[in-house]
Length: 216
Image (cartoon, rainbow, N blue to C red; front, side):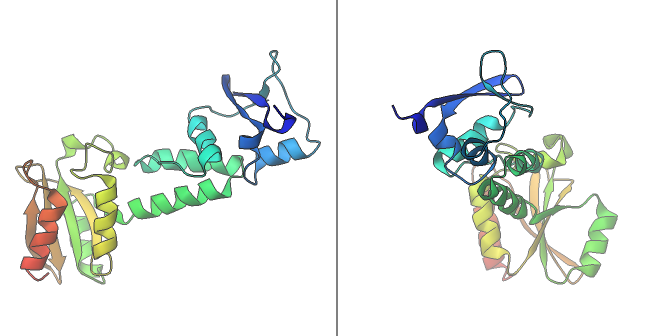
């Protein structure tokens, strides 16, 4: 085995990860600088390179360095945590992925109640869709997009946003229908019911069909 591909032990905040020099130097960043310059390396009692960072997201960061791509979570707060870590390790590609993902999620904006909904209707520059949800279904707002909470996969939701973003803004607000989820279209102070979620059908497909049928 060549010295360049030798196994490296990293102690990240007390948790040891094992990888290779090839992986750690694949991308421009802190690790490449660490191994290609004379930067002093702090080591623990076992000889592992010690880095004083939270190990929570390092498995994901390491997989990015191995493959050049990862599946990010659907939580804005978790993505922000990963962005902080990727910035520390100077992994620009991963930082950009985090920023792009959060930008997609933020296409949906939270409305706190009816007064804010009215203000949104007054000032909106284009028609918008509001997704109503039952508050007990969403303990924390940043979990709104997590798999199993929003009644569609994040991939399906992203495609839906891409399809209709030129025509609508998107919001979500507590106060669902009897089924727990509903979508309403707003334009010029007028509201039009679009669809309610049914376990037997695809929620976003129902919305898409209703938009076309009602010529919204």
